[in-house]
Amino acid sequence: MSNENDPFESIDDNQSNNKTFAIVLLLTITCILVVAAVYLYFSHKTVDSTFGCPVVNGEPTPVGHTIVLVDETDPLSPIQADFFKVQMEQLVRKQMKDGELLSLYSISGDPNSNRRPLIEVCKPRDGSDANPLNENEKLMKKRFYEKFAKPIDKLIEKLTSKKEPEKISPIMETIQFASVNSLRKWNVRGERKLLIFSDMLQNTEGFSLYRGTPSFTAFEGSPYASETKAYLPNVGVQLYYFVNDPRLQTKSNLAFWEQYFLKDGATVDSVIPVGK
Image 1 (cartoon, rainbow, N blue to C red):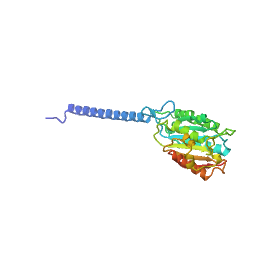
Image 2 (spheres, helix red, strand yellow):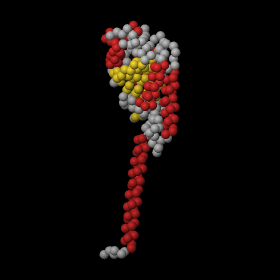
Image 3 (cartoon, helix red, strand yellow):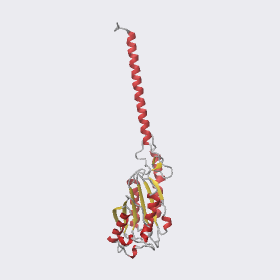
Image 4 (tube, rainbow, N blue to C red):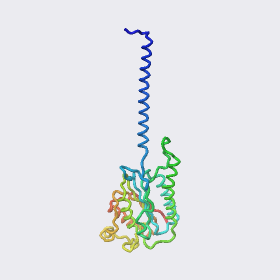
């Protein structure tokens, strides 16, 4: 028979309660630490050291891909140069997603120099959403500027400062280079876009739109069409049409390019004229 006034029984109860409290506290702390560790592990995205792209299963895997072609075979007018700079500023700092790949090509009079991108790099985070627990906002901002924004800005200045026109304008060849050396190269999980800043007046010995715009059917059956065929599956195309010669840049010229891209698996999503 228990004694309700037994002091030793009261001590045992207190010790039992303390042990239970300690166990519960320990389990709670352990759960918090596990949750924090999991959060920190998954919030840290590994990127490859060469291109700065997210790594998935050991392979650089951009979350999207934007290819930019800028035509410098004719010097850009002041308004065209300003337009290009503003569009690139918007693209680099606002429109591209973190982890999205940018490939920037020049359309110049030397087709061989157009074969590779002038720059190819994934957009890093700029620190604006840095986690104060495990990320250095100042360091992220510096990395964004030094590895991404700064080299792109330098290229833009170079591309918009050209003074002398070129004899040829190999637009189709440069699109083909970009399709092979960038689109085929990367495993992308997301949207793929092609932005072209040009008057869209192909001008080479093999084919020139300065001689007039043929029907696409006639062009499609030519050897030149086979030689310059591009690979653009499910690519959205945005044309920034530098209006340099309105007599040649007609609706038939635009229709020609729309069919050209459609045949290569792409679609023209928008056409924006940019005056001279």
